[in-house]
Image (cartoon, rainbow, N blue to C red; front, side, top):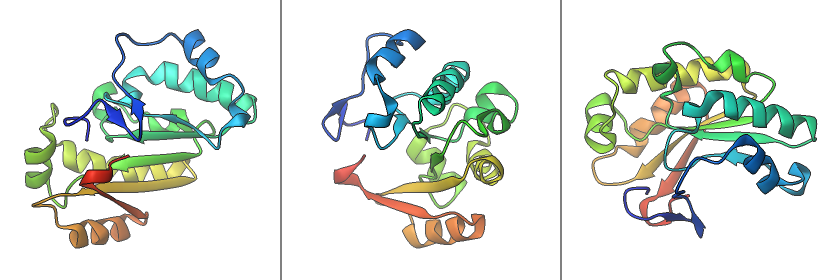
Length: 169
């Protein structure tokens, strides 16, 4: 988890500054060399919505695929539904459900925004309207009811990806 290490699956995620769009494109090179280009990291990638949209459009123009790993707070951050802006640009989105209810979510994630948990559920519902592949994720940890998370995912009509705490990524 990001609170335990700067590395996920051998990749250093902490940057000393936000890269420019040009630096991101240069780092990617040919997007077709990769199964997909993933926007993720320590912060919420959709905080930089315009950058994500611009790079995603470029990736799609180059014949690549785009996935976003998000905490589902983008609509709260931007005070609007940002998902229609991602239609046609994003192939897949993985949204961190993180808990089976709001109380547990707040205890684990300590969100900045009030009502973050219900906002995440609505974000999933809206994402399904514009993004072809939507899933929610949860990390196995004490206090998280995985079976209830599975039920929530089923009710939302999306797959649940369960990650073990010791193998986060």
